Length: 77
Image 1 (tube, helix red, strand yellow):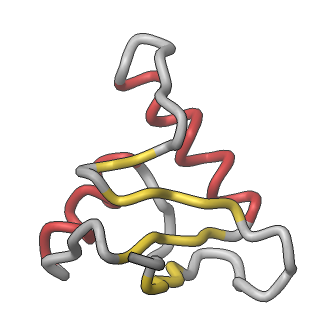
Image 2 (tube, rainbow, N blue to C red):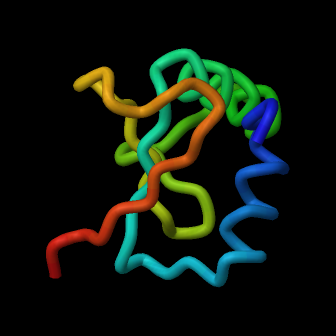
Image 3 (cartoon, rainbow, N blue to C red):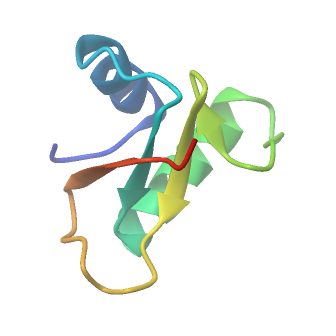
């Protein structure tokens, strides 16, 4: 995905039929862009944890996730 926006992330979650059994991890630059877009869309309000359609969105702090890539991981139940 070239630019990870709020609407693009919603579409990705819907198209891939993701459920709350997974979380999404993004490169720090993409995470920041997504948060700013989310804030614009939601009148500068954000929830913690950061979720879109019930899927938690996390920032990669390990340096493992390349820019413009979406990493899906199973969550502990």
